[in-house]
Each structure stands twice: as C-alpha cells, then as structure tokens.
Length: 196
Image 1: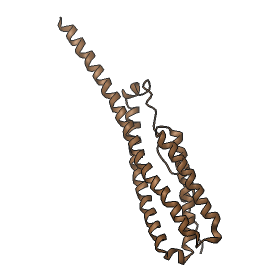
Image 2 (image 1 turned 120 degrees about the horizontal axis):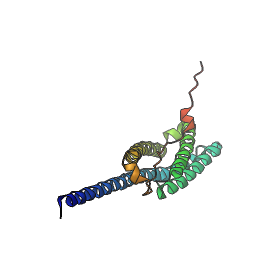
Image 3 (image 1 turned 45 degrees about the vertical axis):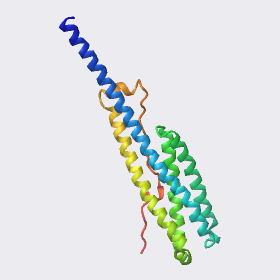
Image 4 (image 1 turned 30 degrees about the vertical axis):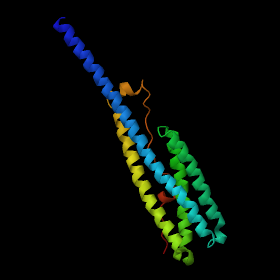
C-alpha cells in the first residue's frame, strides 16, 4: 500500500468521524430540549392539580363570582390539554405555540381570580386558601425556571442546528428547528393606567 492511499483512507475515516460527531451532537441537543420540556411538564401538571383545590376552597366564599371560577377551570382544562399535546411532541412548534397561548389564557384567568380573592377578607384569611396560594406561587416560580431552561436548551439546539457545517447534516436527517415556549399573557403586556 502506498502512502497516498493511506493518507486518503485516513482522510475519509476522519471526515466520516467528523460527520458522526456532528450528527451525535444534534441528537444530544434535541434530547436535551425534550428533557427540558419534560421538566416543564412536571411543574405544569403540579399547577393543574392545585387549581381545582384552589377553586373548590374559594367556592364557598365566592358564590356570586361563579363565572370567574368557571373561567379558571375552563382555562386550566384547555392548558392541560395543550400541555399533553406538547408533551407528546415537544419538537412540534405548533404544539408548543398552542401551549404558550393556553398558558397565557390560564395566567390571565388566575390573575382575575387572585384579584377577586383580594376583595374577600374571609377568603384571604382561610388557612387552606393561603397554603394553596403559596404552593401555586411556588409552582409558578418553578414553571418559570423550567421554561427558562427549556428555552435555553432550544436556543442551544437551534444554534447548533444552524451552524456550518451542521446545517448540511441537520436538513437531510430531519432535525427540525425547535420552538421557544413563550407565554402569551396579553393582560401582563397591557400598560397599567393610573388615575388620580
């Protein structure tokens, strides 16, 4: 065997090894953002489990506010359904977008619920209600951290996917771009009006 053939074989083996490393890096990135979404899913399920208890505790105090209570439960059910779809396919951008929209509606409904609860001193003083609100607040923080980690993982994966020469491997092997989870809370984005 001549030196030229050996150099050629080493170059081919090196190129194949480099392509395998790119492919494995893309797989690792995709699995990281899927795992990050699984962490969000755990926290969202905890949130969904707390909401009915919170509403049930408030029902006795808020007899005249049944519409608000029903809106919270309906928003919770829609968000939970969207979460199941997104959990089944965290790489599906439309499922992640639908979850963000549903979570925005739920966040708005909970905001109205908490504002309403403030108007009822007996409800605010209820020990169970205080504990549930504290647990929900803690869970909201955990959801926020998990969402931030997911979005960081998605950004790292998308960056890796789009970089040269990775982009030549990503396309043929169907590494689709991942979607950030953005909560669409229109109420939170509105400017607060202050009147004197």
